[in-house]
Image 1 (tube, rainbow over the protein chains, first blue to last red):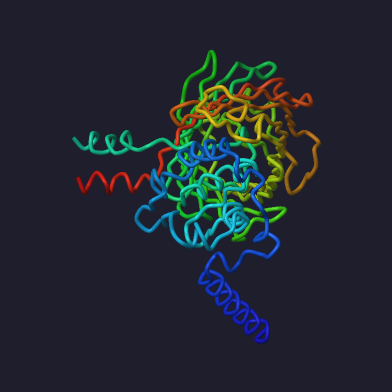
Image 2: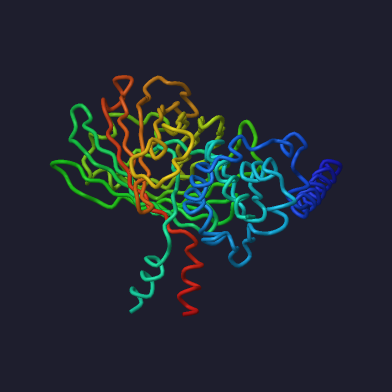
Length: 127
Length: 284
């Protein structure tokens, strides 16, 4: 019984440590290579940018601001990380998985087509 | 003044599109966005054989505590023809996503406490729930207080626009009654996957269609589908302008122990970043 108790304590310790390590890692470092390399099938489509803008107003503006400028602790999407460092595949991965420990919900409820439209709009903010 | 101070920040908030699934019984792994409050009215009406027609309703307040934890509070009531209209009680539920990433199947743990009597909102069917329960007059049914704990394992997947969800339900009356079991299954998809490039009210992507099946699985001493009610039916919703979602469904009873047809309808409205709106109002 004592061994079982020690094993349980060890499990809790390791689970807590791995959760803290996972939460402490930047989301972009968690993206698998296969997702990182995914291209946006709607890239260069002006309709996708317009549709993405409407989706952004419906789903994202409440946290990230009307013009994606960021709000309080919610980051701006004009940042170097989003505009230059992250590939469309990285952003798609983030939208599907969210960053639940840091308050970013998963948007897997939206079909893939709408996620790519959103990414087209976010990437268009660079211009 | 207090009421005005409460309402103004809510009205001043921008609307958010909930993109709800058209389910009335089945839960998915899609949680409420953190900080958002969704207010939802869900109603059901049916005519059990040899009993009076009834209408049951819930008013729900669903709040996103975090991106992985959603909390909900319900007020329930019902009205029965040739009988009475009564408040039947309340429920508190919490849903937690234990896995922090999206998987093929995403589990959610659900815990609910309810304190109801004569409830006819039919938000889940468990044990041997069925037609005989509806024959009891409200005055008698009210005396039977049900304080129950409900646990659900929600399994849900999103793939190519489809959502497929399975709920396994177990419920225990906190008095000396056996565990009761039930299930709910559902699948749904938007009518169009890509969004339109222009604002529109009735475009196909604003509509979602689905099918839902649910029923009881007996209790600890008589597990199975004998003397249980089972339902199957289509459901639909429409993301209306102004942040509202309207839902409707017809469920068909699959055996003699079920009500032949249940008509369900729902209206929901989402208030984004509720506490943020109050903070802004306080700073003004």
